[in-house]
Image (cartoon, rainbow, N blue to C red):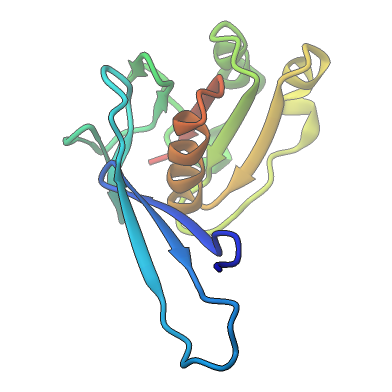
Length: 153
């Protein structure tokens, strides 16, 4: 008998689910089940690093917006401090249910007035560091959620 999954990770299109036995009489062993993500024609982050992200194997070194169906490389804030209401209005046109804002190597929070029009339209905005935004996007996308990742590079 196993406990529920402890971790759900997505790495290069493979979902990793870690299970740990409940029985205390045996040594604790961890088994990892691998499930291939078979989503066809959906965008997934396959790597991220200092100043770049990779979507489906294609490297980007400028700010981008990624949805399961499309990559928008014309989203042009140069960095977090350059964000304006216009950049968030661009995201409104995409109409996701949630936007994950990747703010670089550390988590930063934009002023709520910048994204007020999104929350007024019922679109959630979550700020996190870029690696967390990429991982969270992959998980939500695999659950068929209408998600967009706005990544500042």
